[in-house]
Image 1 (cartoon, helix red, strand yellow):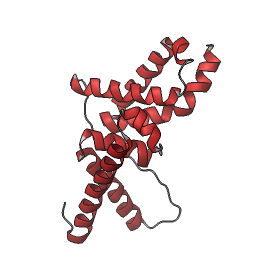
Image 2 (cartoon, rainbow, N blue to C red; image 1 turned 90 degrees about the vertical axis):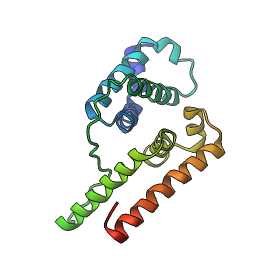
Image 3 (tube, rainbow, N blue to C red; image 1 turned 60 degrees about the horizontal axis):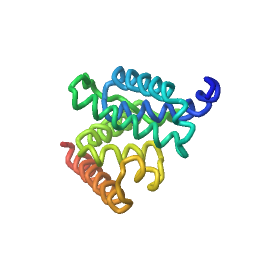
Image 4 (cartoon, one colour; image 1 turned 135 degrees about the horizontal axis):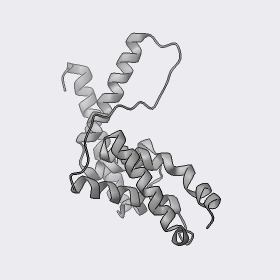
Length: 169
């Protein structure tokens, strides 16, 4: 596989690798390092990845495993997560602050979820993977994925309702 072919295969999903790494490692710097390391590993095994049906799923699985290894080795410097997935035009400053606070709260709540739920909600709700792909990546059965996703969403929903109704978390 030539470099140009490799780049055509890997570049379309490198941002997904980064976002997953950032979700798991929290620190932007750690996620950037992880993404770079993973792309290098993919490059070293470029001859093997030609044989995979879904290179993206393979790379996501590699990312998940690599991040878990990093976390287990306690080399990760966990910094705060600041991330927004939307930009609106002509929104008042009050609303912008409220939206940012809500997004930050959701990200904080995601961070409190068990690892399994955290990765499933990242893959499904943020990266927009379908259930079959998530099952392959996580090596879980479809019902287990659906239950974990449902529980994660319920936990986040209840915490948000509590926060908005009572003003406390």
